[in-house]
Image 1 (cartoon, rainbow, N blue to C red):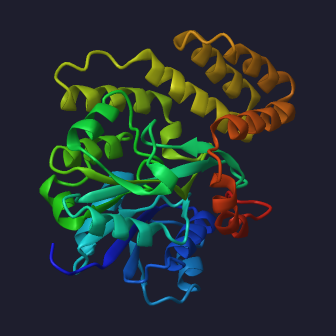
Image 2 (image 1 turned 135 degrees about the horizontal axis):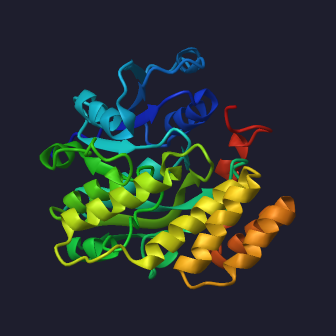
Length: 340
């Protein structure tokens, strides 16, 4: 891979003016500065182009593509456009990064030169960018947020049941050469295209993983994984394609997805959809406790949301993560973080 350490950051977007502006600012504010930020604007009509042009940073390039591409197609376009960059990082337009994210990943790559890709842990946040819980790839983390090498076999084992790479696309950095070698994202998949790609990369390379909250993954009704039927269909396709003996998609996979869907609905004050998702989670996951949330989502949505956040943070936020995350996440908070 030579000495070229330049990183291209690829951000697909469509009609998310305020959100993508936050995402781009989190990229341009990186302590690692040898980068270019490629926003693939799939025909936005909400002033996205004007808002990005106002940033005025020469490292930012906006590629406007009016034909429908979807996220996978837009990311593939970004990979192609990243000429002169040995590395490509992905960021969804509704997520943001910690300022040291790329610096720490490039240090991990230097420490483990056999790794041709890297991922980090992250925090899950609501629409208001308040931390809800931690998302980690491994149950046994590296000490004190240090980087660690994860073998190809372990990555595939972790990905057998679910896409365990935190935040989907938004924590991954990969060599452009390996992305081209495996053929990029499968644009025929409406969802789970990232999971499918990680499995193909894992067949070729171990992963440099950093167990630290270096990205914020936003849970809200506008994210693409909100499409339940497509998500379930594509999950089955990915497993059948990559694991000959995978068998049916585990019930725990469906239960987890329903819980996350319910949390998005609760945050958006969508009472009945939230209750339905909690009921499905209780049934599929054999977890009757989820029925309590179903009742609360209908009767007391505000109370349910506050209670849910307290429980998530208390139970799943590792010691030290809040003081590490709060300084870089707080400046992004506004009264209204989601476009109408």
